[in-house]
Length: 150
Image 1 (spheres, rainbow, N blue to C red):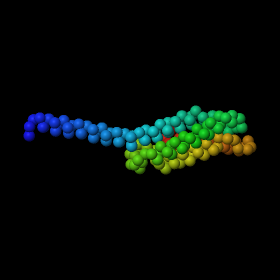
Image 2: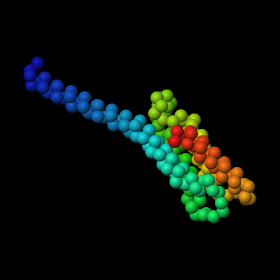
Image 3: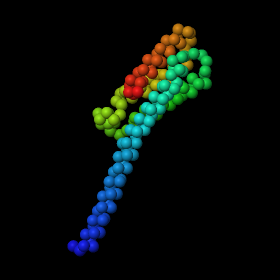
Image 4: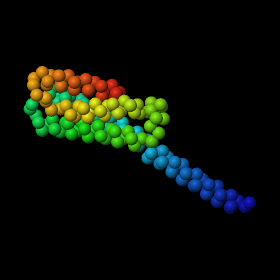
């Protein structure tokens, strides 16, 4: 085999190897790393909202209807996004075992708590009912924090 042929074969195999490694890196990034990162960013936004809107969750009153509607929609939207982002992660059970993502069951419970919190932003009738609702909201907030490890 001539030296020129060896050089071409070596360089060709090097290029093909490089392309394969690059392609595999992109597949791993797009199908595994990015969805996990996207879920983590969603959990980060939920954490921010729970702190930022704590005064609304904790004080169920008749005033501030516009802000309550915004908080309710934001909470429900974030619950929906969290559920969707969790469903986008391939081999979730494997990543769960490696402790790279929260347990699916915990995420599903947190989504339910967030939707419940979204539904309980507006005050019920009666002063005692408002106090009870505020307590329930506080319990939901604590459950969400625990479930999502916030």
